[in-house]
Amino acid sequence: MSLLALLSSATVHVILTGFVLQLAKLSLLDSSSRTFSAPINSYAIRALFLLPFGASKALANLLAGVLVRVRDFKNQWGGTSLCLAVGWSALLLAPAFLLVSEARASYAGSWPFAALATGTVLGVEQGLTWSASLLRAMDAAGKERAGLASGWIETAGYSAIAAAAVLITTLETKHVKCAFTDVTRSATCAKVATSCASPSDWTAACTGECTCHGYAAIAATATAVAAAAGLVLVATETLASSRTTKAASPKDDVPLVAMNEAFAASPNADQGDEDELLTSSISLSALQPSQAFEVSSPSPPTFRATFVDTSIKDVSRMLCCICGFIANLNSGLAWGLLLLWLRDHAGLSATQRNYVAASYSFPKGFMQVFAGALSDRLGRRALVVTGLGASAVALAVLASLARTNEHVPHDLAWQSSLAAALLGLGTALAYPVLAAAVSDRVSNKGAISYAIGTFRFWRDLGYAAGTLVALVADAAGAAVAIGASSAVTLLGALAFGVGYHQL
Image 1 (tube, helix red, strand yellow):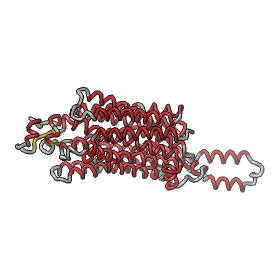
Image 2 (image 1 turned 60 degrees about the vertical axis):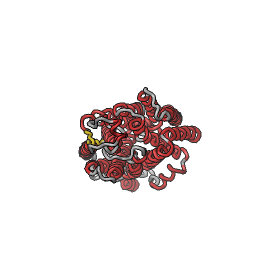
Image 3 (image 1 turned 30 degrees about the vertical axis):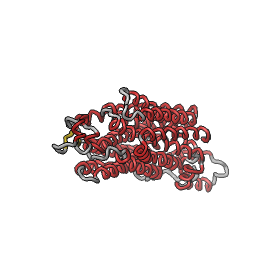
Image 4 (image 1 turned 90 degrees about the vertical axis):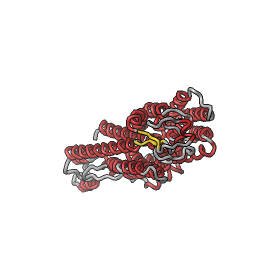
């Protein structure tokens, strides 16, 4: 496939991946108390899906780093195509889990099942498809443009996430219906709610009494359509690549080792016959790029050795993993705790809450391609330190807003949107640069997928840690949890600024 075809393919896959993630995530968050009656006073239980999502996505990233090295030259089924096929196939399980969970919504264990099952499937799909798209783009662009390629993929994916945050409001209005479960209502619910016909009528006081249905259908439809589209795209790409390679590849290629032996044995070898040398050069140039690389390059380090180097031995790569973990810890906070607090405790409407989510996702999406390209010219350290520093400031502002608690300011919606936008911008400056920084420090091209998979493993465990932040919020309040995240982010910025070795 050509460079343009590879980048276009990776872009389409990651757009599908980001779009389905946002629709499923927001549907799960909203259904936690409206459909499944998860306790309104527990952030951790309602953000439960982040734990299996982050853990399974982290492990899928490791698997992706190994799978992209799998190649079968007979049918040109490359490793990235294999990753994409497995990832989209796994997503086909999500609609069944979602619909079965909603059908059993009245049972006590239905919400944990929905969160754990759907979060796990989403994590596997996200880890495999996003990693494969990223590695495909970075390989096509080369090391000199690794930051640009990483930024482009992250921009495409997170722009789709932002667009889905706006779309979910329309889908929720049209397809989610609510009703009281019993004619007799508690005094608290009756005092604050006179009707329960739509999600905008739902209030925390009526948890378990005003229930809404339709969230599972939104998420199930999105996941089914995305999985089908992804599999069709993989099949189409693989067929086209196979035909192109078959037509372009000569049938009488001679392996390089055999070619050299034949040349050495030639009676003209000592005379340096130019015709023989020309024939050897032509045969070498006819090899597939991946075959030529495998013949001429030393064997890459093992996966285990690369995992240890990236996680511990190479301090700069280790700092990339730590800062990536912090970045996704903040993403988990923005996806879970912050959105739950704004809607169910601060009293923002669904539309206002979704616009806050979009305010975070749009700058995070649009700016990553510029941050990645800029880091190719200015170096990685400055972008990462600036991004984490801006994120720490944004979190400090959000923590101060959360301290208002019952005395929520009238202009909380736009204040939260501005702070969320700064958090998204800060994340955008660091997010794609960290992956490129890891790639910079891997000398053997064959080990890059292992190193990126390891980095993304530690980075995406930050999502799972978002559940721990929610536990802190349950114990000490949202303001303390968000403030603690701000402090950790600032420490990460300082550590990277001091410890990262710029190449």
